[in-house]
Length: 104
Image (cartoon, rainbow, N blue to C red):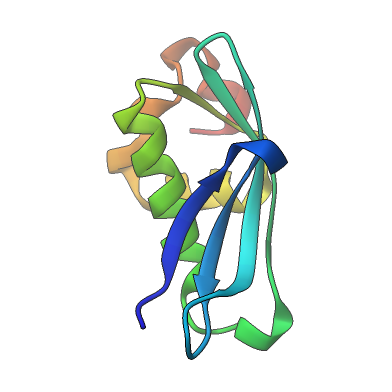
């Protein structure tokens, strides 16, 4: 089964589900949602799933969802910030006036 990114608003995080049956939480990206902005604060992939590209899939899924919901992104998390830096097509999600603060 392909990994799936799911928003878990009750936990304030996106999770990526993987494993043989696709039900195992392989990682998460924690966020704080406020007034049309989503601030990503921490991303983690379980060491059992390291090196499989799941961090990138998680970042893409979370950012695509933020775009679909019309949210502005504040990438305080170094992983999310670095991923956006490597994928400039996502830079527009970060408010222009705040990009310099994030090095974007």
